[in-house]
Image (cartoon, rainbow, N blue to C red):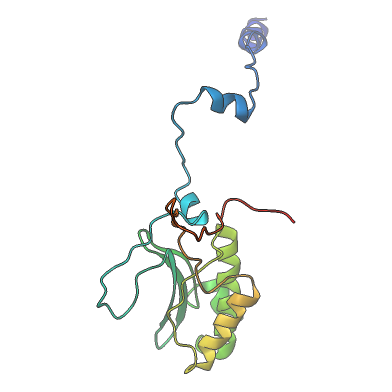
Length: 183
């Protein structure tokens, strides 16, 4: 009997709880004074975020949000996407056991081909669709295979230019990337 009373006492707060009303986003935005964007990549997707310029006399340009990196060692190959502030965001390597287990060799062209597919899938899952590429692929056939697999899977190897708000006197007004006109 004592056990039954404690169970009923536990259920009592659940019965008396009040359910808050559901509000639409428009109603919430009318009353808001400050909006905090918790997605740091949102400005990059809208092409408004600042791109670092680096120095003019540098050999490699630093004007990118995400950059493709290929590291070759004697035993492995690593393809990675590096963010200009946060370092490596997404990577695929022949050091990873599930990938290494499926490959005959860690340095052959099949490894580059499959690493390109895996990296493209991981990029799309993480929301990265544009990557800055500084690699010269004319010399190496294996790097060419990885780059073609990235483009086949839907990753663009050039980043779109940053949107600059035009002055009121400017004749050329570029299309805003967040406004999509349906025809």
